[in-house]
Length: 423
Ligand code: GDP
Image 1 (cartoon, rainbow, N blue to C red):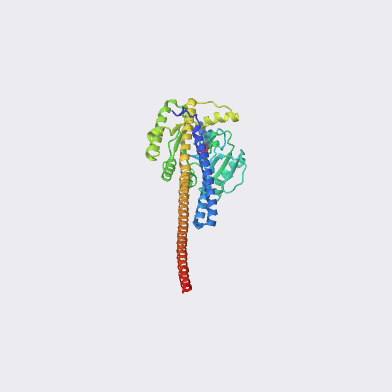
Image 2 (cartoon, rainbow, N blue to C red):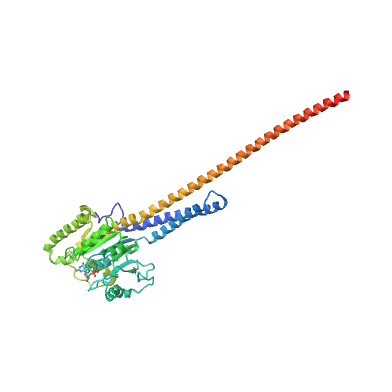
């Protein structure tokens, strides 16, 4: 029932949950930062007047406050990330464009991407690109030249593999794209047939990926390069989320009598790959991970609204393929937002909790020291008082005694004097 509304939620809410969670987390960390700032201030004041707050404790509280600021910065940068893999010309760029509803990436006609291309939301609705090395905005017109430049340069240097893991970032206005509006970043990779440097690819671009999409050519079987890439991925990441798109499914419409059989073959092959080889999902889950689509048809129908491209003859069965692409997008959205919330935010929550426990310990220790000091002072006070009282009472005793003595003396003198007088 992936098509229907779940629990009354309108479709498309899955992606927004990431943003909602991010906002709520942000609010909580703003609160925490406020408390900790107050705490640090009062520690600073107390430490000036009393011995029971040590400088090291003030420093530690300050350090914890800085950690909260670091988490806040990371939280602002957090996004959902999907990476696309597959052989050159299987249609990776076309799938990304279809999902974005516009022709963002150069695709087709012998174009091969020789570096990683990452599409993300523009901060100010300007379209521009940026390379890894500079912070300068580069005109989007230079994209083709740039994506090939690294290839060309490297060939000139005699090294074909270097630079294939380099990254060009494309900043695109988010108005028309639900994905970009909701902090999704899409990464196109060079074809897995281009480079065997999978480990550096994975280390550099995939460790923070929430979802992987393998774009296959439905007319061919899975290649060794595609298999070994995902074997590396699943050995480095625990249970990666992998979707498989059998793209160019429109091409098989020409032979409808074989279509069902081919579909079954692909299904069996890919289910075995996900469930048995990679062990990333169960047989039941696998059917929500494997789709038969035509990215070109979807892109044409979606981009047409914007760019009046000549309508092409739609092959038999295009509605089913369009529906399957839509099903893929729904499963993808639920999966990426769940995964990103779990992996990205749980880390922050754990750190936040550690920081609060740490601060609690410091506060408790300061509190205990303060109580001890109060006690010592009041003990001191009490013993002084009793000393005082003692001295007071001895003084009184002394006074009484001396008064008695004086009286006796006076009496004696009196007796003596009167005796003398009478003598
Ligand atoms: P990439 O190298 O994997 O990024 O592949 P591209 O997206 O550049 O696509 C290569 C060629 O295949 C382009 O000419 C696309 O128009 C074409 N193509 C992509 N998807 C489909 C599809 O679903 N059906 C058909 N028939 N052609 C497609």
